[in-house]
Length: 356
Image 1 (tube, helix red, strand yellow):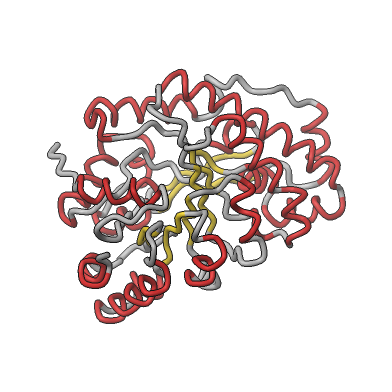
Image 2 (tube, rainbow, N blue to C red):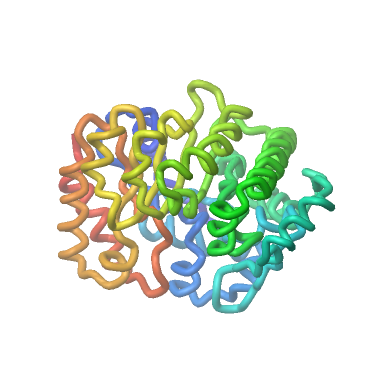
């Protein structure tokens, strides 16, 4: 497989993550989460995509070699890894969609019974973790130091929602907070042990770590502080160091908790939601957190024109690039059928408007 990484863009990303100002705003299309886009672009088989790392890597390298921008290479599993650790959800794999989960803890009684009989999983062998390890080993064998260790997981709220069903989980939190806290503690404690195993197996060069938790900001501010903040912070406190990259991904509205994110441990925020205005976030936390986003994957990337994409990229750059600490990204996953012309439009707009 030919590997043609744009190392200059990688250097820009590293500078921006540390709140620095490179010569130009970097771009990251986050290919390690782009199942639906790659599926549509290359006509991939979803089941094979899940099981065959060579198939996934070939798709990602075709993208990078064509567009010459960073894409965060790595195995793509959607929700098919972290929820499987706890034996309370079934993974649904189909040919033409990314993996999804079917929850088991769909009543409060089922949750209580689960907690009563809970035995902590083995962090080496739980669920589909060995599958992820094998896929990463393939990527590492081909790419060497061009790929970083897979030090990222779904956040504890996303995992809990996968086990309970999202609506059920939020109802439980309001009506039966005791069992919910017990579940959150068990998820968080296991995650910390699994991170230790990842460090042992993958030997990362640093203590960078990413959490992906779209559901956490469905809570109002008070409930976020009770049910999300302490558990997410505990995970980062257990592993990351002062200078670590602590990337947090959330595709839900965050304006009501934006000021809490740095204290929770976030120093790189990968987001997309139309209500997350990049200028507002730059004003509130841009001096402490690198912002990554916020080009709408459907409105602009999938259904826009090159002209509307370039105009939106310029608008985002004008609001967020000043002083550095900004990375252009779609945040969320691009849609099946996103035109090549719109991806080129992002690249062209950054080259035209993104220089410092």
